[in-house]
Length: 245
Image (tube, rainbow, N blue to C red):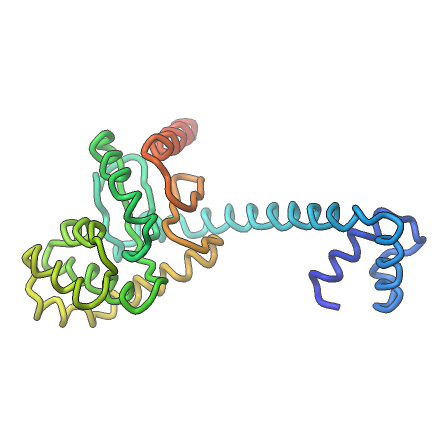
């Protein structure tokens, strides 16, 4: 019996005073008692599932808080991550994204409007290419564009694509924004690019993110498309917490 099955059994058995804890019984006896409990009270299955769900959510929240504490500098101050907005801003938004993610493209104007409205935001971009080889190529090209001082311009242009980001479309956009394609190709092999992407993969796994876009704003973790008003509210909350420290 694996850990999750044993936890489920233990939760089910708590509803019935069989006189022994699940840990004190062998597997066959536990299974028999669980079946007996379910026959007497079928609704206990859903109750047990809900209890386990809450326990897992609580454990995940604790783990995420620990990651935010231990990885704060890496999330907000990694010198290998592009920073847009105000580099000296008092609140940092970290966005994990993929150029082929439709929700990332939808959130682009929300982010741009927020930066225009609030000139005191640092926006840290973490390339997290999880939607295929085209996404990987786009992420590597965007990070390489830093060497020509065109990350921001290239980033916004890629986010405005009306087609998938693949090698051909990415290079076409690179040419349109004035990038030297030969230099770009060479710079895409820089070890710092693989390091950035690997770090993004590690951080998202630790934070429990499973899709793009995903945001870290102060102590808040937000997944999915977010409108400007909600982003602004989260920024205000982060500022308020910092003022209390």
